[in-house]
Amino acid sequence: MKKKKLKTSEVIYSENSIQHFQDTDAIRVRPHMFIGHLGLPGVFHLFIEAIANSLDEYRSGNCTEIYVDLNEKKNIIMIKDNGRGIPQKALETVLTRNHSGGKFDDKAYYNYSIGLNGIGLKLINALSDSTIVITKRDGYCFKQEFSKGKPTSELEKLEKTKETGTIVSFHPDIEILKEIDFDANTFLPFCEQLTFLNKNLKIVFHATKKNGKEINKVFQSKYGINDFLDKINPNKIKNLNSIQFSKKESEMEAEIVFTYQQGDSELIRSFINGGMETKEHGTHVTAFKMALTQVLNKYIQDKNLLPKKDKIEITGDDVREGLIAIVDVKHKNPEFTGQTKEKLSNTDIMGLIKKLLLKELPIYLDKNKNDSKIILDKIILSAKGRMAAKKAKASIIKQSENVLTGLNKISRFIPCSSRDKNLNELLLIEGKMPICSH
Image (cartoon, helix red, strand yellow):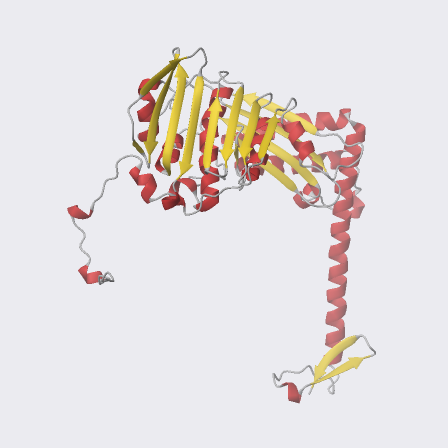
């Protein structure tokens, strides 16, 4: 029977209308608020939340290796690390009670964290129909099972072990996410990316495909984001090096590496706390662009590389033509526009990045003449090309206006105003300028 739709006048708002959801129930009611999208993007978001906890253990100096296992046949994701392990007595709290965790002060996690709101594992639990957590610490393995945000077993004490760490295994809930049949290959680039952003971290990747084939990869980076830049820069300019700067100040760090590629395309990748990509960038990228333009523009002027008589000004577009860069910042209290953390909004990070580039980049350009010449020549060429195109466009527009103005003065060549094609005709004047006339 079809449910009757109430009229506005029939809707009652009273104390009985007020609902209160216990902990993970709110996540299941409004999943979009926490993961942005349902379907496979939502599954991938849960994967990020799971591995983020292991990354926090790595950055705190308690983890060296993360093991990832993906089973396409069963749609099960498993993350294992050799960190300290979740305290067993708090395991149920960590998995079921929102805004609970060990990252609200500096006692357990001093280094920069991706997850600061105590939501991560709760998301996984709430949006999975099966979640199994094993924690290894205090000489034993402990296990507890959950489903749809609720515990389905008591904490179980298992065998003795000398190892420490956490294993999180979960099966996304199709009832909420709608689509959960993932392709393990889509997780590979992200895992490799994490090792670039977390130098020397080892990630062992294993996956079982639907056809039974297996994927086995091991990722580890010695030079961090410098290796990352090489990976995403297939159009390298010969004999041009990457330029890398880093600076730490108070509760912030910034690491930047950039170079220029052949062609005019621009590519900037930005990250926060060594794991979360800020796809919509934010204040850290804004500061980088501003400082880069300021330094290179001033350097060109100071060295008189572009004579004033040419009347050409260097713009941000000129500076960024062919630019390829990675901006990775760390902040103890990152702020974002939106729950899904795709745009950084901390303003204090801007000052750190500007100071870094304003000080270090001119020194680098003076010491590395070859890199300096290639970069500055490319920027100047871009500016000249832009000005030439602007002049050519202005000239064409002026010529067109002159022709039209001249023709308008000839009474027999009056531009058509009728929309009836039967009343109009097309005339070619010396094969150059088409015009319609009555």
